[in-house]
Image (cartoon, rainbow, N blue to C red):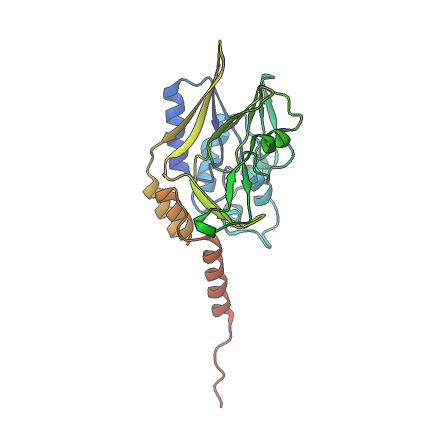
Amino acid sequence: MRLAIVSDIHGNLPALDAVLADIQAAGADATLNLGDIASGPLWPCETLDRLMPLALPTIRGNHERQVLRPLEGMGLSDRHAAERLTPPQREWLAGLPAQLRWREEVYACHGTPGSDLQYFMETVCPDFGGRGWPGVRAASHAEVLTRAGAAQAAVILCGHTHKPRVMQLEDGRLVVNPGSVGLQAYDDSHPHEHVMENGSPHARYALIEKGAAGWSVQLRAVPYDWEAAARQAERHGRGDWADALRTGRVGRREGDIAAALRASTTDKAAPGPTIAP
């Protein structure tokens, strides 16, 4: 059985189409989707229209929860998607499970078994910017073992960080993050400021297969029209996404984009000068 694992599509339809074509060419028997499907300034509805008829085994990510909340206080990426989703799409997202098990040996979560917001194989550190450090490092074996908890499966699948990574635990469990289909770099401020970068714009996914010697993993990087995706982000005012989509590195920062948007909104709402009669 050869399984394809996709995660963190974030509304990037051309990246998804390229990955699905690569999966078909690779002869995968099934595809599992680890969530964060539509949130982002790209093609949220079109991406869901592409995925929903495929009926892939799919779990929700943190952004599935977030786009279904009230708009007040919602982040830019979630809001872009939330304002466009159709009622059937919202209903489909609301029905996704938080975790799933595939034929006993494969367990899937978005972040960790305990939280869809926790990083599994990375650890955020309060050292952003010092000597150029990104504020995040690869997690130690002990950290990953603790986060895996009591999840009993030969293979534990996770997403969320957008970083393709594989770790074999001392008890034999294999932890696999396929990386992100749709976004190869981002910045975040929780729990500390940090950046995640893959260094190239290729769409990522994984192929896993059980053989006589155990499970093998291929971490795949697929070319697609990332310039079209970057232009779509720019059309929606997200230069930070455009930079990340073109390069796989963080350029402009989300916080700067949001601050500029708030300032623009405040300026437009401010009353004009009073003219004396």
